[in-house]
Length: 435
Image (cartoon, rainbow, N blue to C red; front, side, top):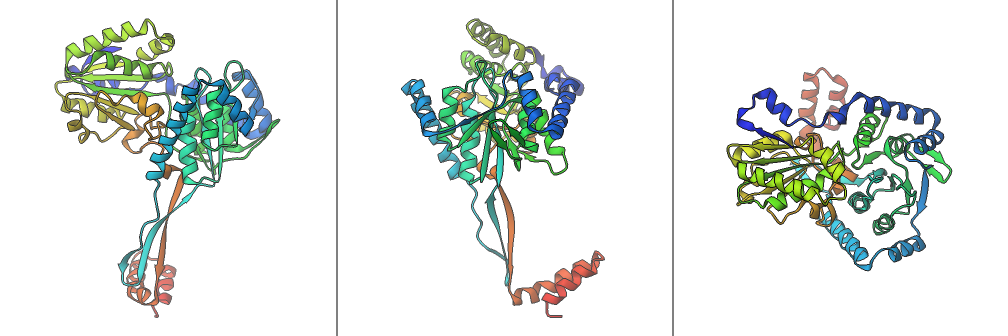
């Protein structure tokens, strides 16, 4: 990780200090994704299968989530693992049921003129679950359960095949816990293309979806971006690319915990980015030394080291400035490990998820706390939040007007319409107002 002193940096230096890895936006990714999307749009399922064989080493497969498949997956896992997965699923469901938006009450703005907001589930959603190097069944829970709670009509889950071509038992069990009827083994940009354009495959048909959800590597993030820009293309949840973590720590923070949290995100992906911001040089020294120590026994050390090369350890004059740095970076995950972490929360305005205090490990949020761990990356947390039940729904205003209400409000609307030069608008109001 690069060590930087915030007070010595000019404006350009500060922008560079908070820049995301250049690999995320290199032209090879952009051009490669465009080629895949164009090919799938032209050749459909044949192109999806070709790209899957080329990039994943296996053709697409549909795994039916039957009672027999669930029972086999459960038997293949240690009982404690199956129980942990059930607890995580229950917590995710409880949280999203409690935070599901409801229709508002009627609001009368003028006597006889009432309006409210109504919420409806999406007709369909494509759920991308990262995989390949690690079976991220947790992401399946964090997407499929909120979609289920929202009442989405059709949920299509896709995930890359593992090296041996078979789904991990935990992935099957997670799909069953989320009430899915199938799981497609397709990864990368070709999976996003299949969800965007639809694809007829050997194992069945994937129909186009209304909205794309889920995190992924640079290729998946770029594919979602390009798909959403197409005329009539699907909406997307958010930029959800390689993982990010920023930790604000003071002299009282535990260097071992700080290092463990940095590595927990660095091991995700070579394009992941971790940041440490502290007002204590001693804490930075101790934490980075602990990172090196823990790396020695980390199974995914090579991946973590690649990510750490894009990491930063930034010394700031005080914790108020640390919060300002965090807001400027707008991390996917923000951990506050200080003597009085609650005091800093009010200063945070841009983060996908905030973990308050040394016990609030980001890992707990990743798996079992309840809120979805699918969060905005690349600075998008400045303007949007993570996946929630509301993201799988649409809202609409519903208006009801009585004759008396129209008589009261129509003259106002007609006058404003004529002020804008829209006579037909004004006449439509006049008819309601009895004129």
